[in-house]
Image 1 (cartoon, rainbow, N blue to C red):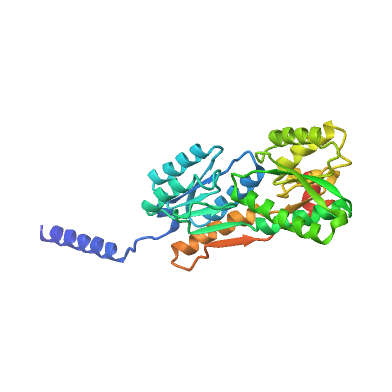
Image 2 (image 1 turned 90 degrees about the vertical axis):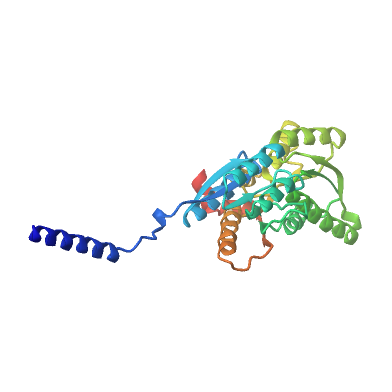
Length: 324
């Protein structure tokens, strides 16, 4: 009996000793995943698909679970943000559908202690706190678009249509930069003025922009150029001009540098685009989240410069050739 008891005590001592030597694991696989909620203006636009997917890839490297949603309508996007709040998201990225209206759900996230970051376009509600806005230098891009239309008009007195989208801060900035350069050009070149005959809403989409261009061609049959605030809008203008048999006479400037836009530039349907870099926007936005969570300083805004892309660029674009 004594030997049996002694053996039991020895076994118990060994077990306790073994427990003391085992250290708890801290591997990423055992840590609960953090939720990153992303809602963009629309997933019907390839620009936002690229932005969101790149943000997702970057966040997943750091243990985040990522949910990507298509805003589509302002009310729908507001509900998506509130859903992220109820799910206790670790952070939220928004590419706002309505830059002023998005302020209310952002303030709800602020109250819940969830940091909000905006991508591509910011929030116009100054009472809503956004940690960082990562976006294209849209104002500078608008200036490049104006330089492209000046180049395309080749010193002639011209009539230009602008297809805008006033619900997006980014598009407002593009038009602002465009108009400023045109105004300066006209002051220096009174015999070769570029006259903006109309600024019409194109809804940043093909069909409304097609209709707006058709309407303007009816009132301005001698139209010389179109500046559209994104590629879908520019392609709407292209469809209208083709239908009217005026595509060769009217120069179209887009904005974005999406695949559809670059292909249209290659075909000579769009003259040029100030191109954006949506993947870089998505990746940099997530990197600001990581810096913020680490307690590092984060700038309130990061601007990414555009680059003018013409047919000559399209002809030597290796990525474009792969898509053909």
